[in-house]
Amino acid sequence: MLLLVSAYGNPRISIVMPIYNQQKFLKCALDQIFNQTYQNFEVICVNDKSTDNSEQIIREYQETRSNLILVNNPENMGTLNARSVGVLRASGDYILQFDADDNFTSSTVLFDLSVNIQDASIYHFGETWMYNGTPITDCAGYTDRCDEHVQGWVNPRLNSTFSSQAIHQSFLKSGISPLIHGKLIKSSVFKQGVNLLGALIGVHVTFTEDYLLMFALTKFAEQYEPLQVTGYVYNIWEESVLGARKWRKFVHDQIVVFQFMYLNSDVKGMRDLKKVLEWNLATLKVSTDEKEEICRLLDEAWLKGVKMCDEIKSE
Image (cartoon, rainbow, N blue to C red; front, side, top):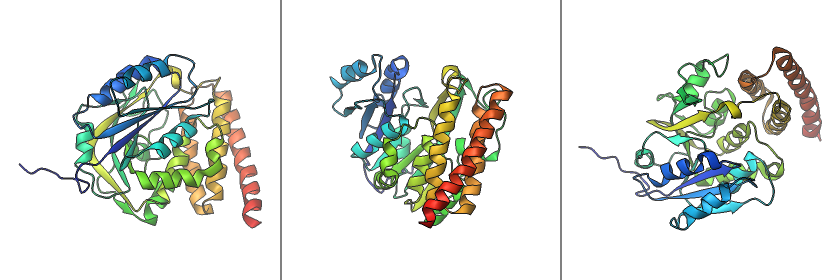
């Protein structure tokens, strides 16, 4: 029997988990991680000023787990900040983002990933998407659109290996998933991406923070490699889907994402990116009138943002 051997020998994996009021799912998530057959990992839980028992649960696990690190944000800073703080604290060779309400597909996922690690900047592995506990096979019931790009995000195309600048360009064209989960990312590359974001990490961004992180780190990635491993369960719950109370925050975060990307990209790339960002609108569970209002606000923000960013670029 042929055994795969990683170029790293025994690579250390840093699992970063942003947490805000996740007591309902947290024990299950931690149990799934610590029950992995591959044990050379650390878990970095960034508690974003939770108001429930999330911190207490983590501290209980720390009593028997020396590789569990707790970072407490002094105030609620948003998911972008929590992910970034975890990345900067990571000591592993590779970093994996894991949300507290998600799961692994089995107890061998980390092993299956570890034996495939050679030296790529980004390893993209397959996912199973669930909506309220039911597998999503065609995105029906979650969005009103699920095109070939999204299918490629869930299950990476095995012939889509990219290198150097082609990685960032493919991201802008949505050829590479803009979602941060389902990826094993070289620690040095991830940290360069976070450092590129700079002061933006201090801005409260909760929605579409994946786009910012992937935009930044793909600028430094030298090799993107898809893996024939399905290891991540991405759970979408009814209460977490964008609704009427959240869409204004969604619009705000989209504008922040756009402005940063436009300032750090070319016009052609931004045209491609605008199409990807607009896909997010399909996930909103709001009325038709509200969707039209959101579209109007996003278009208005797009035009104002382009003008403002062009003025900054010309200085």
